[in-house]
Image (cartoon, rainbow, N blue to C red; front, side):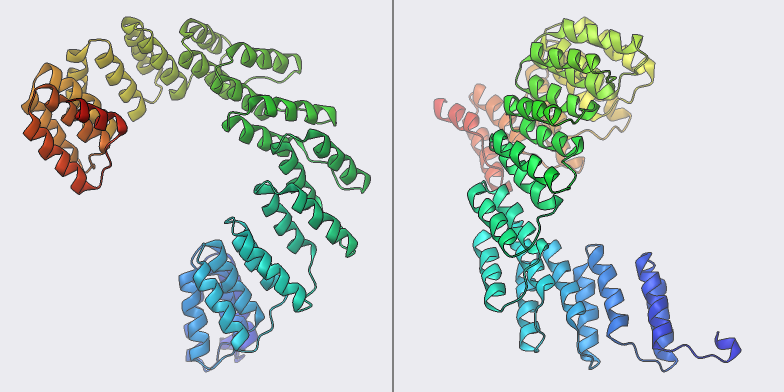
Length: 475
């Protein structure tokens, strides 16, 4: 362009900078900015806003603030877009003090906050459970006669639902409808999830019907799977199954993720027969189970002392040409060692290696811990030393296991050397590391050494467990 005698103006430069910022080519954008200034074209507010938006979008509000300050230093007056961009950046990163300071600066400079700005503030507080502050902003909007939009109500309703304040959330729903604002899918999803989570499926189903009558698509199976998974993780598998039935009731077809979540919930609750019943329902529904399904059940059987059932499923996996993963082998190994079947565990470990499956640190932790608990300490020490020679980066949990084993078999001095090796391997001793040493020292009657170790523990900032404190008191 310049070779043809055409000099780019501020609009041209700003457009190029904006395009570069959108593809995160920030260094190139800065070069264009410098070229722009060198050619005597002064950046305007739009130019700076492009930089700020990109930085904030990618979690770099500090860099965005530097551009904001540069803008004001050069005599430019930030507009509402500049303020809302940086406010959103601060809000997203949880910098609430910076957010409020900037908001106050905006008002001091005569920029009138619009609905979008207030929504940013409400959302920032609401997502952190600070509903008092969020509602103060909400009230301020009303007092300043700022038109509230669907987004404002959606934010407030979602926060109230998360807090279990469902009656208040319904009041806000009715309020927005009275104002002529039509609730959207986001609003209904928040309410339905809230009522599902608090076991009011009658109200949840009524809301589903209401949104469908208004022509709003009902929640899909992805939505219900998310709710089911959350409830299962909280140990509320019966409630989760009720939501599962509700989803089917309104015409949604559960997928493999939905079934897997419910199976996991029953496994976590130790209800393995129920978990297997869900698997049967999955097969009847024509949904193929995947490696996650098998891993979940194998792990459930292992943790609930039914390792033979876990092994049956493990063999079924291979027959169905589903390759066991590291997690599958980990569950089986854990179950075998827990059942005292050390020989079978060692054979399974060899099978794992031969299959080419990745052996990671948690697997080594299972093997070493299992060997130690089953009176195969010498084998554990040999494997531990072999791993050290291979420069495998072990974690502090493995060191703790081996310190206890080495103390028992080889004595105090070698255990102390191993304790020192934690720091030598760029790891930090934790409460368990100190606890293992202190417990063994006390068993030997070495109270002074144990006391010194306890003092070191205190200085390191590690809090002793209640178990360790009880041992110390009894000694």
